[in-house]
Length: 202
Picture 1 (cartoon, one colour):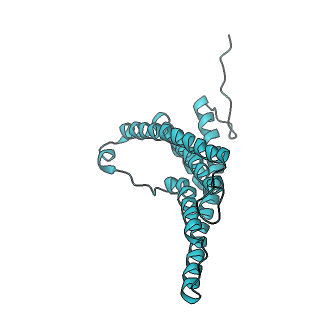
Picture 2 (tube, rainbow, N blue to C red; picture 1 turned 30 degrees about the vertical axis):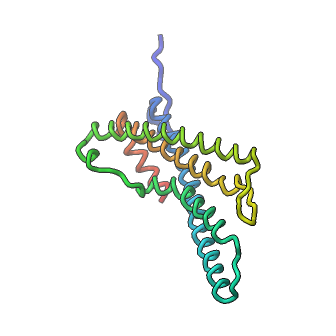
Picture 3 (cartoon, rainbow, N blue to C red; picture 1 turned 135 degrees about the vertical axis):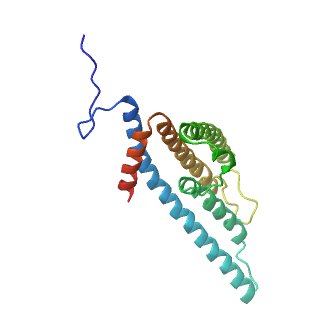
């Protein structure tokens, strides 16, 4: 019988199954980072548009005594876009609040195990949340619901930012789950590929 040989990477080194999985995840993560940055730009632009709308409303009310009649409605839609489209980027860059009281008590593999447990719970929660958000928007689309304002905006259109942002955040959490698993089961591999990923990104 002949022994099974592991495939080699681009540098001629033997790669395990876990290395191939982590490598594929790292490649997908690079694309995810680009999507997160695009969403971030759109999130920032929504704030700019909100500012323009509100300023126009104030100026028109002050100088001409008239109203756009849409400023409150569309500022609300844009605020939702700002929040949901910025979620994934904020999570990746450590912008979410995290309780360090318990986490700080662990070191080494215990800390890695805790990180993995948290990532598993968060991923499961986000998968359920995203499923219901998508279902909610689909129900709005099927019902043809419109806003109560004078514009009668078809509501599923501004609601689209909710599933988009939720899917991006869920993908970012899955990426964090893979990194947490790598840090626990193959810390050397995780450190090397994270360094390579940082170099590629820079």
